[in-house]
Each structure stands twice: as C-alpha cells, then as structure tokens.
Image (cartoon, rainbow, N blue to C red; front, side, top):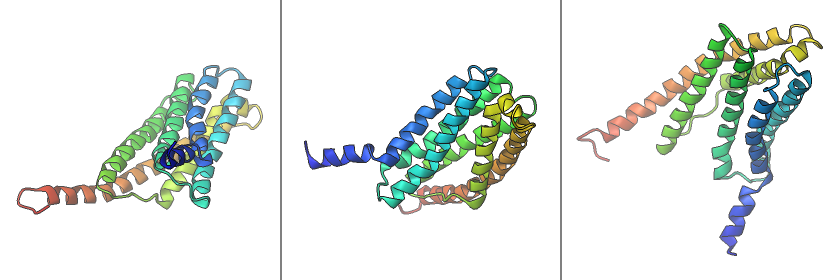
Length: 207
C-alpha cells in the first residue's frame, strides 16, 4: 500500500472527521426518536443525542485545528452535517405539531436561509472566495441550537420546567429574525463577488 493511500485513510479516519460522521448519523437518530412524540422517554433520548451532536460540532473543528488535522472531507462534511441535523429536526418537530401555525414560518425562514447560503458558498468557492462567519451568525446558531433543544424535549420538558416549549418557540423566532439578517448580510457580500465575476467574463474584457 502506498504512503499516499495510508495518509488519505488516516485523514479520513481522524478523530475530528469521525465526530463529523457521528453528527451525520445523529440526524436520523433524532428523527427516529421523534416518531414517538408522546413518549417522554423518546423525547429525552432525542435531546441527549442532539446535545451530543451539538458538542461534536464544536469539538471537531477545535480538534482539527489543535491537532493540525484539517482536511478537505472535513471542510465539506462539517456544514452538511449541521444542515442535515437542523433540517431533519425541524421537519420532525413540524410533523409532531411542536412547531405549528405561524411558527412554521420561522422554520421555513431558517431552512430557506440554509439552502440560500449553501448555494452561495458553493458558487463562491468555485471563484476561490470564502465567506467568513460573522458574529451575528454565531448568535443565530446559538439561538437555533437552544430553540431546537427546548422543542425536542417539548412536553417532557414542560413537566420538569414549565413553559419550556414556549421558550423554544420564542428562541426559534429569535433565530429566524437573526437568520434574515445574516442571510441578507451574506447575500450582500456575495453579490459583490458575483457582479465582479460577471464583469470579468463579459465580452471585451480580458480574462
């Protein structure tokens, strides 16, 4: 076996990447638990899996930087794992009725922004342009993380801490509002690069 093959395998199976793989697997696990929304045990189990997945979101990036184990597969899968987990959780919470009525618009806003920013990042990556994560985007992520945690445990949490579900809905709307702001901020930054790319490829311009 060549040294290159060994290096590629060791990179793919590094601890930061394994944590990312685990977060990908957490999405269907949380969704499976929420198939029984009236079972409090399943609610708590779903919350436990979700919380562990959220911890890996921090750990994989931290360890990759600390141990100099950053890789292309890690950079690709990390944002995908986050979006799969959030999307699957939002869909299951909507199906169970934990997110309903006007609050569905908050979920739609969050999902739409994730798709929009993912497409924008993918296109800008082809131009070798990176879009840094802003401070407000980090606040959005924190609010979204807490909101989904409260909503996952739902009525099981209400039995322990009254109004847990309502706190989750309030945080979901806060995340949605921050999502609108950060989505617009990313689009504004991205459009400048898009216009510049069009100018460079316009007829009469030298490559």
